Every structure is written in structure tokens, then in C-alpha cells.
View: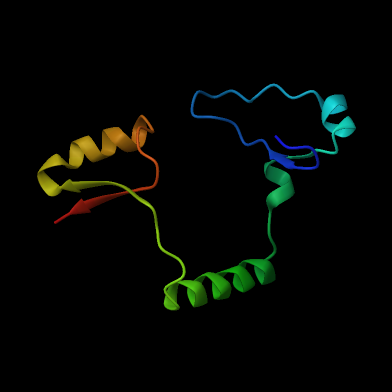
Length: 94
């Protein structure tokens, strides 16, 4: 974490959180956030949705595909999602 950064703690697949020293974070100018700090209003959701759709329509937003699986390997796709072995979205080709 760079000085002056933001640390957003939401837990991990293992159920734990990274240990954080709030005093050290303050000294380094790091802003600590939790799940309650990132809630958006309906107006904010709509504004972000409009922006995302415009970016996607303009070809500037593309999903990261972490794995492509044929339908007969759908169980393997689900395993990859559950064990978090891929970065990005998992696509099952039909």
C-alpha cells in the first residue's frame, strides 16, 4: 500500500481479514474503508451504470476472460470459480 492510498477491507475467501494497524495507516495517510463505506445511493448507481454502458458501447470496456470452458467441462468451470484459480470471468461455451 502506497502512502496516501486507500485500503478497502471486505474479507477474503478464507473468511479472514488482512491485519491492519489503524495508527500506522493514519501516519502514512492511508484511508481505511469497509463495506459500509462503499455503499452507493440509487442516483450514484444510475450514474455509474450510464457511464459503464457508454464505455462498453464505445468499445473501451471489455471483461477479462480468465477461463473458457466447453459445456461438457462446466463442472471444471464451477471448480475454478469456487477455488478462485482464475483471474477474470469464466465463460462456458455452448
